[in-house]
Length: 125
Image (tube, rainbow, N blue to C red):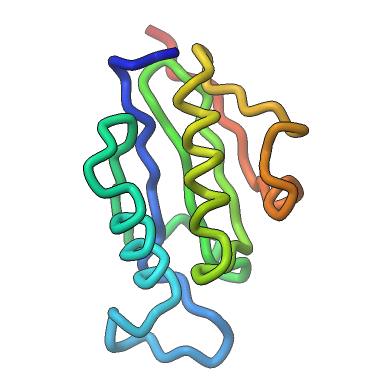
């Protein structure tokens, strides 16, 4: 386990489902997803949740990215803010627990296995 390096969960707060208005911010699916994750994670020191204004996958809302120092980063799109909060937390746990951040496909929750949109290697040190 990598207990000294938290996994950062970047959550796009501008993500919107079809037909959702851009304003108010609190009505967007992405903002609701951020709030749900923030509440579910609460004070768990393994994770930091970071709202971001865009993860550039607007046609596949909602979007999150997992990242940590010296680990691979993963982006996921097409997530449902109401039903996949726990699945995102489960993936964050997998990311945190692996020394290199690689999240084995077969260990991911089934509902988001096919929703990975990016995998980025760690920056060189």
